[in-house]
Length: 167
Image (cartoon, rainbow, N blue to C red):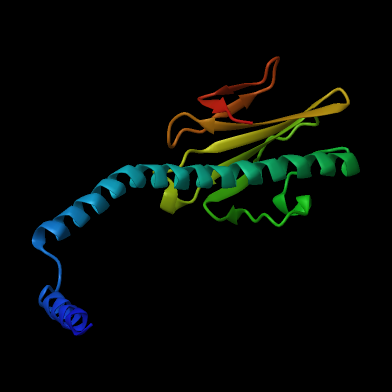
């Protein structure tokens, strides 16, 4: 029984002499973290950009639906953001939102331009609501190139010049 205690004490004493990590162990850990960072960082950046685009897409959808509701009440589209009764301000988050003139009785267009801080990183987006007979069609278009404003053209089918339809 005493031999076990002596061996345990010797083991603990020898264990205290081995403090810290060796240089090789530290390098292995640093290399593992570097490899994980190289793999994860592009995915993170991609997800951040998708979230930024989703903000504009959702807000343009809100504007489109608000225009439809406004048309049901007033028999015309709104030409001022404050008339729509939404919580969206002209500048909301990453984008500045506006109603593009001229507005006709059959269509209205909206523009989402990135704020100055993100103008070189985010694409311009547009949306439109079309009144066709007794129904509404709406679409959202994202520019193909940063800084270029896409245009939505009413037709069969609805097209987007300088961009692509995303909704």
